[in-house]
Length: 78
Image (cartoon, rainbow, N blue to C red):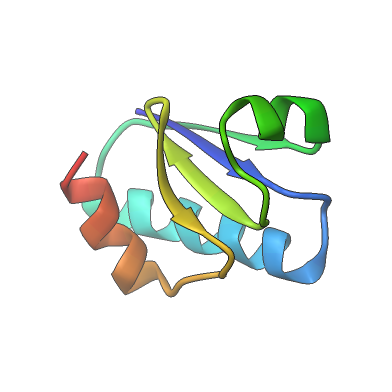
C-alpha cells in the first residue's frame, strides 16, 4: 500500500503522517509512506487544501488530521 501525506510540513500534516503510520501498523498491512510538500505535485492530484491523505493514488481525506481509528476505516476501504 502506498500512503502519501500532502502538505507543507505543518503540525497538522505531521500529525496526519503519524496517525496514518499508526493506523497502517495496527491493520498489519505492508505500506510505504511519503510526504509530498511540492505544491505543484499536490495541485496535480486535485488537492487545494492540506493536509490530505492519498492511498494508492486515490485522495481519501482533505483538510484535517484524522485520528488513527478514522484512517483505519479509510485504509480498509481502499
